[in-house]
Each structure stands twice: as structure tokens, then as C-alpha cells.
Length: 336
Image 1 (cartoon, rainbow, N blue to C red):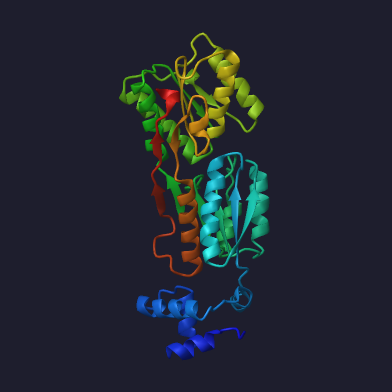
Image 2: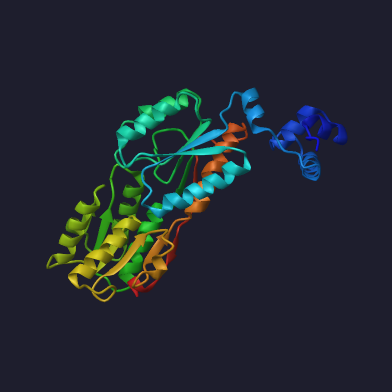
């Protein structure tokens, strides 16, 4: 069986080879009707592009990097699926790099990526990143960079985020309307913009409903699950323990369940719990966990779409623009 090539497609359509090539790459230079004709004929003739040859001509690796801080959070697993969906459509491979919330490891990964082994980078910051020179250097080497979820506001790069402030406010408001009067907030690294926004939503929610802010109700959690468990246990063992808990990430909400079971506290009678979470098992917990669910899969798809637009020179928005996809409150038994 003979392999169909660009020349044959061009001859059938009576257009140039370059027109066919650009149409198949979804270039803005080619009209929609022409693209449609090319796509239909390519499908009919079972045209199979050669990504390896194409990458050699363009000096591209046909690979993108995704740098994430952890895998225990189901959010990142879903985001990666969204990224890979777009990458596959574009004929690209995805390399996953895990920093384990270590700024030094993030710096090491970014430095290794400057060699040109990838065409672009999608990144979510570690919880301890303060020095951003390694990210600036990526841009200086003309490697497109897109942030998602945990972003760096001081770098002019596209960002895909959710409405963290509004979600923090809604979570706190929901607990207050459910009857809670001592609401604790389990926060992660305050080096992250998402932490500040969720905290601000929490404090503004208290203020809006004339609830006093108690600094002792804010628990700053670390990378260590063991240390976090101790902090949550101390919080729920105190005489003035909270009657509501807003966890900023899903693993902290799950730890609250473990501590309550150990202490004999009933959820939601003794303490109501809500948390940011994309756990598919949230509805199966006992009781089912009320969540602020981020559109993780869509955030991954959007971040990848923006990256490929930049790679294809079709990115028309200012590089510092943010795409905000709203999270959703899912009310379940843990707050009823």
C-alpha cells in the first residue's frame, strides 16, 4: 500500500504543498474552508503525517514538559490528563517532572529544560519557590512558559487559574450558613498566591457575617503528612476546638476525617468539613465530603491549548493574561 504524502494531497486539491502543510497545522494563514477541504481529503486518503521528519525540519523536539509539585493531590492527575489530551491531538509527547514541593528541585528541572529538550513548559509552582531566576531564564531562552493553578504573578507569562478568592469566601459562607461559629482554616504554604487568595476569601467571609477572626483557628500546614496530622489533632483536641473546618487542599480534608475518627468526633454533628478537592471518592467518604471542586481537567486542557498557540505563533492575548475557570461548590453530608 502506497503512503500518501503532502504532494499527492496538494495535487488532488490543486493547491501548493505549503498550503496543505499549513492547513494541517491549523495555521491562521489558511482560511477555514480550505482547512476543511484539506482535513477531509487527508482523512479520506488515510494521510499519516511524519512527526519525526517534521520536528527535524523545524528543529523541534515534539515534546513538552509538565512540572508539578506533587501527585498525591488528585487535582494534578486530572490536569495532566487534560494536558495530554491536547498534546496527543498535536502529535506531541509529554514529560512529567515532580518537584516534591522542593524549590531546589524545581530550579534543577528548569535548568535542565533550558537545553532545548522540550519545546515548551507548563508549570505549577512548588510551595517554597521564592527565587524565580530559573523561570526567567527559561523565557530568556525563548522557551514558552504557561503557569497553571500555582502561578507566579511577577513573571509575564500566561496563567490558567480558578477563582480562589471567591471559592474561599463561598466555602466559609457555606459553613457559617450551616451553623458554624468557630471556623478553622487549614492553609498550605503562604508563598503561594492561591494560599493568599483562599485565606483572604476565608477572612472576608468571616467579616461579611460578623464572625470574629481568631488567629488560633488558622493552621499553617507543612509538606510533612505526619506533622500536619499532629497539628490537626491538636486543633481538634483543644477545649475551644472548631465546629467547622475549611481545608485548602484535599489531603488535609482527608486527614481531618482520620483525626475525627481517632478522637471520636462525629462529622458533621461535632465538626463540619469542607475542602478544595477533586477526589472522585469524595462522595463515597463517610460522610460524603462537601467540596470546592476545581475544573482540573479543563484547566489542564486550557493551559496546553495556550502553550500550543504560542508554539504555533497564534497566541494573540498579552502574555501576562490570566484565564480564570470557576470552581464549583458540591454540597454533601459533611456540612449538612
